[in-house]
Length: 102
Image (cartoon, rainbow, N blue to C red; front, side):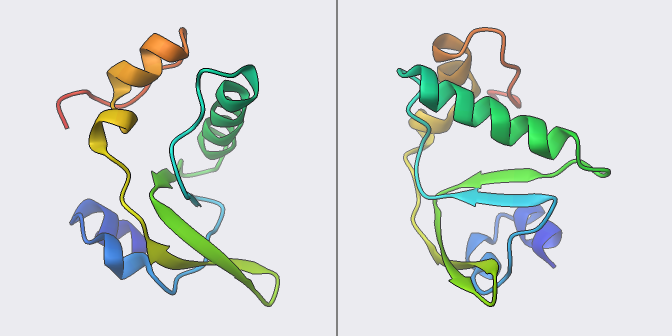
């Protein structure tokens, strides 16, 4: 269900679902101007890259903790410019990010 919602760009369909090995959501953009922010992005991408079937890192959602799981609670869109691959490459050299044409 979550993969289909992501592919269809139906982001609100993620609300109520739990994060899992292949789905990680973040509230806002990464603070790539700081070493800690860049390190956090690299850590999150590496974790998904090591998942058996890859995964999705989706920015612009808040979560709540229920029964030991992070449940996606709300969609909080982040300006697209902040999330462009070009922006990540400029601030975090050596990191490969998805297509800038999307």
